[in-house]
Structures are given as C-alpha cells and as structure tokens.
Length: 424
Image (cartoon, rainbow, N blue to C red; front, side):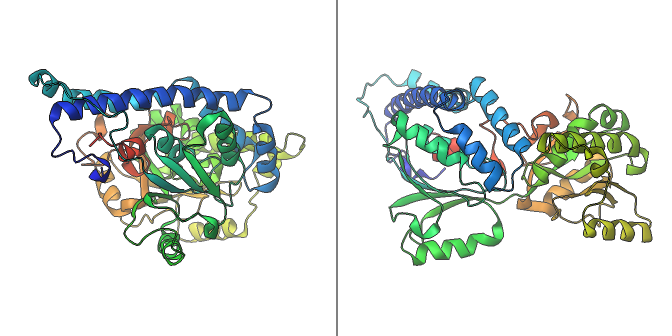
C-alpha cells in the first residue's frame, strides 16, 4: 500500500489511527450497501439503459450474445450475494485484529476527522477483452471514496458507460468525475494513481502518450495488471472425468480471451488417456455456445465439428508429423507438451496439456511469471498444492474460473486494499 494517502500514519497516535480507521470502515460499508443497491437496480429497472447497452454490444463489438449475458448474470448473482459488503468486511476484519489490541491498551480519547485521509483522483484504464472486465476497478475506486475517471476500451464501449451514467443519476456524480473512449480526451487532473489493465505491450506507449499530453506526471504511481492466462491442475483421471465440463468451460468461455481462461493444464495422466471425456465435453460446450449465439441455425452440430481456421489445420498436420498427442474440436486445439518445452500460451484457441506431477507447478509459476493469473484445482481439496507455490496467492477452485467473486485479486492484488488509506 502506498502510504501517501495516510495522514502521517507513522507519527499518528495509535488510538487515533484506530478510531480513524473504524470511521472510514463504517463509511465504506455504507457506500457498499448503497452501491450494491444501485447496481442491482441497473439490472432490474427497465429504464436503466441496460438492454440498450446489451443490444449495442451485440451489434457493435466482437462479444457474443451468450458471453454478454453470461457475464451480466454472473455479476448480478455476485451482487445479490453481497460481494461488495463482503469485500469491505474482509478488509475490516483483518484490520480490526491489528488495531484491537492497541485500542485496549490505550485509554486516551481523540477526536477523529470525518474524512481523515486524502481523497485521490484515480485514472482507470480499462481493458476490453471481456464484457465489463473493467467494472471491478471502477467499483473499488467508488467504495474507497476516491474520484474516478475512466478510459473506456473501444472493444467494450457500452456496458460500463451505461452503468456509470446510471450511477450518476443515482447520486454518485461527486465521485464519478469523467469517462472517455479517446485517450487524448482524458481530462488533465492531479491523478495520484493510475489503474491499468491490459496488454503489457501497450503499456510503455500509453504512458508516454499520457505524460506527453500533460494528462499525468511522469512520477504518477501506476498499478499494472498484465496477466494473460491461467493454469489448471488435475490430480488424477477420475477428477478430470468428473469435472471435464467445468474444465472445458474455463478454457473456452469468452473465446479463451480472459486472463482467467485456462491456457495450460497440468495432470499426471497423459492426454491420450483422457481423449473421450475431454472431447465430449469440448463438443458439448461448443455446440451449446453456437446454439446460444445462433439460436435459429439448423446446422450447428456439423459446424462445431469442422476446422474453421487454416491455422488449426496446419497445427494439426504439424502435430501429426511430429507424433504429438492432441485433441481438436472445431477451431480449438489441446496439445500435449513436455514440461521443458511447453510455451507460454499466446493463441486464444490453443491449450497446452502437460503430463507431469504437481511438483512441476512451482517451476511453471516461476517461468510464466507475471503472465500467469491463477491456478485452479479440480474438486474440493487443494491440499496437494500447499507449500509448493511459495508466495503465489491466486489458487482457486475451477468452479470460480469464469465466475469470480467481485473481490477477486487480479495479479494477486486486492484493489480495494490498495486504494484504502488505513489498510496496510
């Protein structure tokens, strides 16, 4: 956490710091309750503009109708489950443990300012690879009590804007300062933080553009999230058979374009022993996806079996030539590679299967570095992963791969904690 937003916390009386934190926590929980309410209303109110934004996204972006509705349904379920309040309570509970003993030992009473920290101007540069992928950053800024300015992705220009407009109408205009699709239209403000999500290849260029245009200063603090894929660990053949549909869903949902999409699978069992359950799950998932995207089509099952891309046909031929085990359905490939030769996933529709024991996960985490988002385990038990991955924190059930809670940690960073003044 950047301590520049703390009111000289190292010199502040501990009891005053504790009281200030508790005051902030109450305000933040109140904001969470209100924000949760207003967002659910956006989903349910016929006048919210959501349906218009959905239709604009279907006709004006590369997202499928199925993926848009899937994402919206997932977000609504998480809101109704109370994720925003839970997010604040997670931070509150941890900090209470640190400050509780201090409060018991100190008897002095100090007045606490109603706003004991600096409200920051935060610029959010949103990715557009998935529908509403930038929502979490916007919510974190609002929850923390800071001022939000958004650079909206051209790839996803409708849904988030619809939500921002709705929130402004509901009284959030003081915090929601501005948003724009054009980089050059970002207002020049004293931004203390920039939250960036997207491709690492565009990061340096974008920074230079913003500094040159005097939109930000060269020393402005950036939090960059650039992970591009996730891994899954399958402990045995039975677990793969049982959870094949969940595994394939984590691979193909959103066309494999998300950083939470599985690009590498590690399993002690070779791909040749699991061809049938994986092929059936892949066929079934792709057919359902085609039906969702084209409900009136009569030839979907046949189309789902065809290789639509020349590059896929080429890769199939190459794998056959070198005697590599692979599975191909439609324009999706799962290829088996050795631990030593498995590359970093760069194609959204090519997944790498590594026949290896759990011990190799640590070496792959180290090799893939910042490109790796999460590791998923199949089933209810992740004890086999304990102690193997050092400081890697994003270890999750495959159940949450494409349906994460709103408080999940991109690149291992809790955005609300990062933005909050007393959570260190």
